[in-house]
Structure formats: C-alpha cells, structure tokens
Length: 466
Image 1 (cartoon, rainbow, N blue to C red):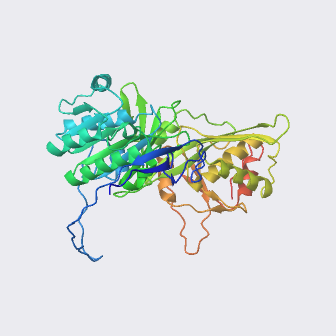
Image 2: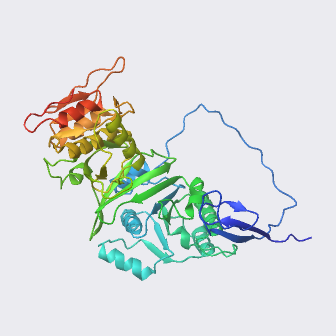
Image 3: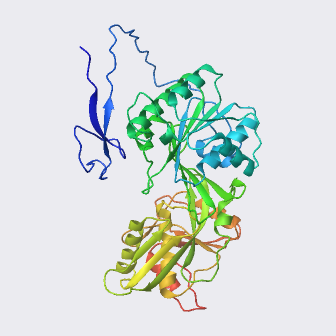
C-alpha cells in the first residue's frame, strides 16, 4: 500500500518541527513563522548493500589538508590558510554589506591564477555581475558565470564537467529544489538544497562557498539550520556608516575561530587593511575628556581602538539612559555598578553613552579598563594621557585582573608611538615582571579606585596609577 505524504509544521526561523500549527514558536519565541510543509514518502529498498565499518586508532600521523591560497591575506587568515578542497564555507552578512563583492574579487583572483572557479548567482543576472566586475576593474576571462536557482540543474552541470577548484553559490536562500513543495528560502528548501550541494562538493572534491543573509538580530536567516552541516561559518560585519568591514569566523573545522580579517570599502571594491590600528585611530583627537585607547586582541592580531564616553544629566523622570555601540550593554551596566559601589563615583543621575569608534565589535573582557578610563575621564573632566593605552578586566570588587597576551598588546602600542601602558598588576604566584618595549613606560594597576584618583587629580598635577 502506498504511503501518504506527511504534513508537518516547521518554524522558518529556527527549524523547529510541530505536529500542528501555532502562532508562536516555543523554541525561538518568534510569531507567525510556522508554515506547513509536505514531505513526500521515499520508496523503501528491499535489498541494500551493507558495508562493515573500518575503525582506526587515535594514534598516528595525519597530513595537514592542502590549501587553495586566495592571494587575499585577510581572507586567508580567517580561513586558516586558504580554502580546503571538499570543504564548505557559509558566509553570512547583512544585505549590501559587501559579501558578493568580496567573493567576486576572490573568484577573480583565483581564476587569474589558473584555478577553475564557478560563480552561480540566484539574485543577479550574468550581465549585472559583469557590470560590477567592470566597475571593480576585475580581469579574469576564465571565470565562469551562471545565473540559476534550480539546484537540480546546478548539480547535473557540476557532476558532468571537470571538477572546479571553487564553486560560489550566491545565495542559498534563492536556491530551489523541485522535489520540495515550499518556496525558496524556507527551512525545508534551504536544508535540502544545501544537502545536495554539500554532498556534491564532498563527492567531487571542490571547495564550496554558500552565501546567506542575516536577520535584524544578527543571526543567519534560514541557513541557521544548516550551520552544523558546513565546515566553516563566517560573518561579514560592518556599519554602513563606516568604511571598515570585518570578516569573523564563528566556526572553522580547519582553523581558529578567533581570527578576523579587516577590509575597507572603497569605490574600487574591498581593499585589505594590514594595519587596522593605525586606521582606527586616524581620526582620534587627543586631550579630550571621555576618550581612552584600548589595546585589544582579535585572534593573534593586536588592535588598538578608541573608546569614547559621554555623560549628561538625566532628562525628566525615569531611569537614566545607557547606550553602547560596539560593546556588550550588560558589561557596561556591570562596570557602572562597580564604579559607584567600589570607587565612589556618582553616576546614578547621569545618562551614559559609550562607543568603540571604528565599527569593530569588541567581545573580550580586557576592554573593561579602557571603558572605565573613558567613563571616569568623562565624569571628572580630566582627559587621559594622549600617549596612554589601557587593557585589563575589572572584577566585581573593583580589582583589575590579568588578560592574555600582554606582551603582544604592548608591542603594538609601542609600534604606534604610545609612551605609557596601564594594565593589571601581576600578582599571580611565579609571575615575572614584563620587560617594557623601548620607549614605553608600564604602570601596573591593582584596583579601579587608583585610576579614579589619578584621573580626578587637578589639571597639571596628574598622578600616575599605582
């Protein structure tokens, strides 16, 4: 007896499955995202070939996977050294942020170096891609372009031709499989289309790049259900009000997940930024209250950023406003509570605004001390030293805690001409005193109250932190 089609209800945001329709998805909390989908029954096979598995021990030598170098150092850094054959990379980002531009530049660079590269777009016609390439002055006659949303046609073409080195699908939300009765972009279509393309990439040994868009909350829309299927997930971040774009890895089976690539958007496309610290600080104005320089670390790369704080009297009734850009708002609330409870700084009746200039989002706790310095400076009206950098984690009792790679941060500060570094006191047992780079004075700080006292000193009588 033939099986009937199975009807189920799937959330289009997170992929949760329900036996019946409801207005709200209990898994992700979204409303009106549950859609009915029909699954056609598969024909069962009466006889199957059963192969026994061969198990291998943990010990032994395994060669590193080969890499396809793109020639774009910032991209290769995030990938871990280049594309790995038979790997799948998911690149997400806001619409218009520059994902297609970056991948078109990458495809052109690889095609010019002799690699066979296939670029398939479901959003643009071939003529539109050619026009963008002409505007970016890209020259790659061997780059193969196609416009299609039919995955069956794409798979049939790639199965018969000579295997390419790289295949780019832009974007996975536009792909459509005729065996799935739902619209392109739905969870069922995204999952099924991705599975077919990934299976083909693993079978034929080419690198596959899938482009996806993100939601207003910053998560991958639709492709979130396939993050476990791919080898690497990368987010292309940036504020359209700034020229900088950050490529960050959220998952990478062939490299580190804490590396970033920095690009600048120009009229000629994306260009690499080998020294982002100099550009992030290019517009900094010294001797202004409410500003401090943070010596941060993104993966193995030190990055110096300006932290800006602004305090103003609370207007009207209600709670004071706390606004932050480029940092965790919860971290700001914690820091303000420590400054009030442990350091005696009165901020209850003040609106607090904090900004990490440049468009880079900072996630490491080492930014606590720099943010505190900017807030204290804004509250007292006493500017921080124009030649000083700050880094350190602030504890709930106001103590300044150690952060990793202090030597690397100090060398970056010295290279850019800074003369003073304020960082946590080394109190751990067996800790050795840091040797300062030439021309850089080190000031170790044990408690946040010392910084409050130093920045609260009268003008011309600045005290150095303990």
